[in-house]
Image (tube, rainbow, N blue to C red; front, side):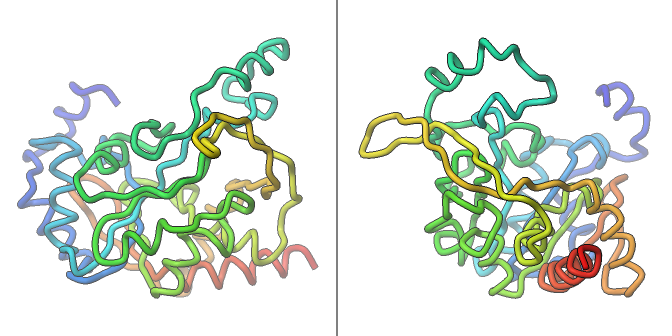
Length: 268
């Protein structure tokens, strides 16, 4: 959305104070462990932009809680899997040989949005060391959540998603739908819903850049909206607004368990 459209669609400027108030009204609380998926433009015009959103989240959750955001970098993946857009096959090996290794401090995200890209640069935010499916976290459990993120099965039992599950954390969707609800990927893993594939990415190994191949699941979020709609019919999702953005908050464990059973029934 262009900035002039955002201004035209905003009745009053959003601020740290107003976003803080909206977060609290939605049910976000001090001490929560919460993974956030977001669209900045959906909120409307904000005094301070993405910084104001991050500041408001931190103000409400505080250091007694933990904020997590997905910081995926799919442009480091094997180009043979690219489709949006694809690149010529004779480019593939050149890309594999030359794309810089993943570095959690500097590698930018791709397609995650401005709020995520702002959040990952904040002081005391730490990021998991996964070249494709990393997560960034801030607060009480941040270090533990991002530690030891398995290269294989990036959204599986040895990922930050499992640690959020174990902490009985929450999911907050700000202006995005369930197709952005990364936590449902662990449902795919637990149900064996997808095939395993060989993937690759550049990493640092003993201080040297290497192209590393590993096994992962062929994740697909195409059914997540359908899962989300059926899950919401159970009445376990709180809906509200942050500025203009339609928002949802739910327990991660509830939708992961629901999604796991949904995939198992579908695959019977």
